[in-house]
Image (cartoon, rainbow, N blue to C red; front, side, top):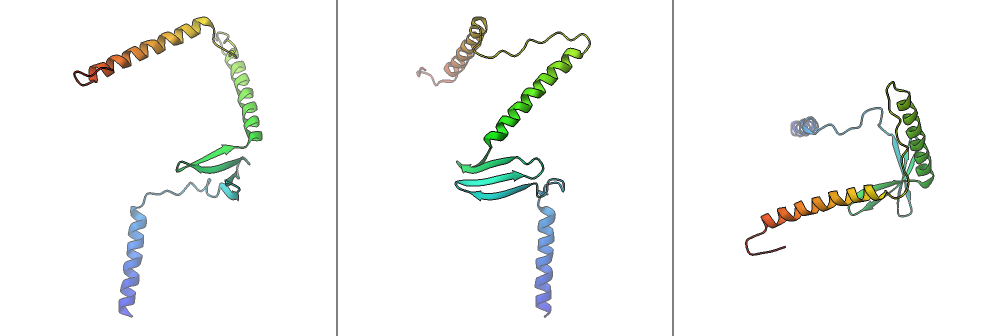
Length: 141
């Protein structure tokens, strides 16, 4: 009986020590149980109980990947556009604020394209210079 008590006490002590050494990985009480997972064909459905958002989750290349449902993506895009408009309106109301140009849709103009091309060219030339400097003697790139 005494041996069993000592073994139980040792196991209890080891469990307490392991718990004390392990980093706290528990989510905050406010987020505990936030998500519910349900099996679905080819993966899992994840429900966010706080927002009601539904995502489809799969494992790709050893990583968990969750994608928002199409309807929610449209709703999120609508909310983003609303917030952008609201942000622009609030910025315009600031004293001394210069009016912002509306975001352009479509292809960049010739000047922007040439500027981007110039940056890219300078970047590539510098990278090639670094590669040449680091290449072993007698080898070329």
